[in-house]
Length: 132
Image 1 (spheres, rainbow, N blue to C red):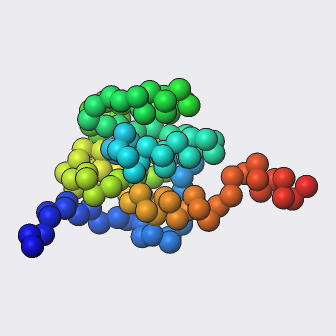
Image 2 (cartoon, rainbow, N blue to C red):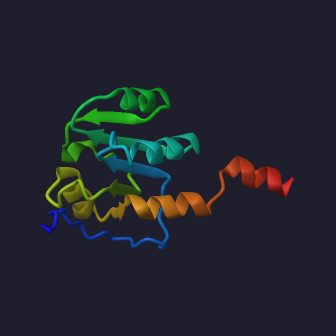
Image 3 (cartoon, helix red, strand yellow):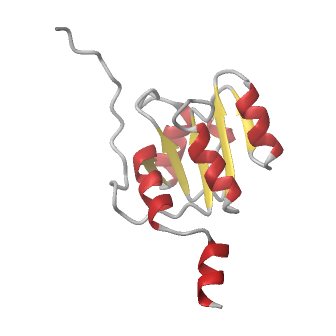
C-alpha cells in the first residue's frame, strides 16, 4: 500500500500546551476541519481572521460573525497583533502566512491544539454563571 504524502509543519506549540487564542488567524479557514473551530472561536468572542484559496458559503457565514476573511494566501493577511496562527497538514510549510508568523515569532499551532484548548476551557459566560 502506497503512503500518502502529507506536508508536515512543525508546530511551535504542541498539543496540550498553552495557546493564546485571543487573536487567532486560520490558514485554510474554509476547510471542513477548520471552519467549525474558527466559528467556535468567533462565538466565544475571540478576534478571528483567516484565509482560504476560494470563497464559500461557510466563509460568508464566518464573515457574518465578524471574522476577517481573505481569499488567497499572503503574508500581509496575518494581522499585526495575531497571537496564534492555526494550520492543518493540508497547508504547506512554505505557505506565506506560516512563514510570516514564524518571522514574527507568532505561535504556529495545529488545529488539534486549538481543539484541546477549546474543549478544556468553558466559554466565559458559562464560567461567570457558575461563579454567581
